[in-house]
Image 1 (spheres, rainbow, N blue to C red):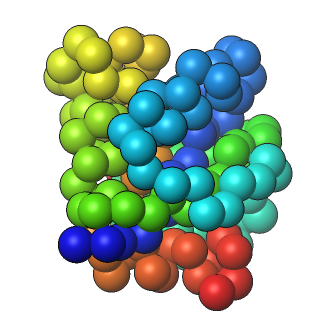
Image 2 (cartoon, rainbow, N blue to C red):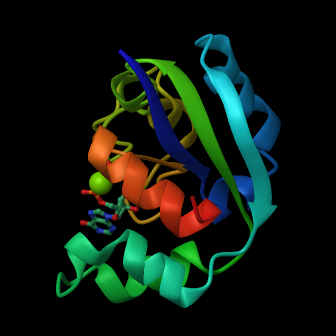
Length: 134
Ligand code: IDP
Ligand code: MG
């Protein structure tokens, strides 16, 4: 099923100079890049994106971290892009993420886990609207 997903290279990965190798992983899937932008999230955008986690103990730290520096925001398109990207990213906690996945290869702690990817087609629509306004 042709589908869009919202992907973000998080501030820790951008600060470490990992934009190119991570972007390569996504390009290697064959998915198309429809939008691509470097920028720093506003607190409002961060809170809206992570609304489902409001009230959890890690939420304030998550908002601080995700707004701490520039991120790479992108929209990828192609067959089952949501699932393809989630598999490529690996488990939320990099210590549980398999080697060969982006989080497994580049991440170490759950607080700074390198990449974000939408978890469903509905989330993708919502997140693309937050970050690209359409
Ligand atoms: P996901 O990014 O794999 O969809 P979610 O459970 O939706 O994982 O969590 C969103 C983000 O919140 C994670 O990517 C991570 O940055 C952060 N996070 C999740 N659980 C924890 C935690 O226990 N401690 C610190 N940060 C967390
Ligand atoms: Mg999630």
